[in-house]
Length: 172
Image (cartoon, rainbow, N blue to C red; front, side, top):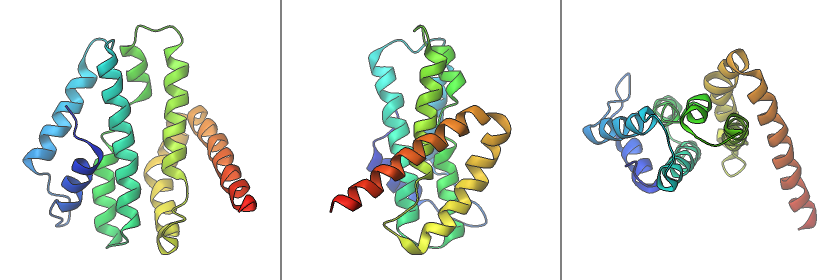
């Protein structure tokens, strides 16, 4: 079973960095547990769906928290990359479901995940530019090549989120 948000964040933020991230035994076990979950022929149980949702939330939150602590950007990139690689492929998730219309739901969920990841780090102004460059390099450019439809959906969601932020600021 994948760990909770804090445990996952603590593991990745405490991992040794040389010229790469040194994966601990606990981190390998997590990666194996996640891979096992996605190797199932079908994800039907509500608990499995909940585990996947919690994993996504932990990864997204962990990546944003790593960038928010504003340490060495090269170390942050290695740590965040390890987390990002835990996120499941939406097409693989859709293939595991027995629900009609699952591909559309998974693609929409993936677009939402990307939008949350790609939102600027307003809380840490000095990291906004580095974070946006990293997101563009490791997430948006590869996705633009492999899945432009998901990127288009994500951009629409980002625009909506930013409009909501601006609206909330106007009201305060």
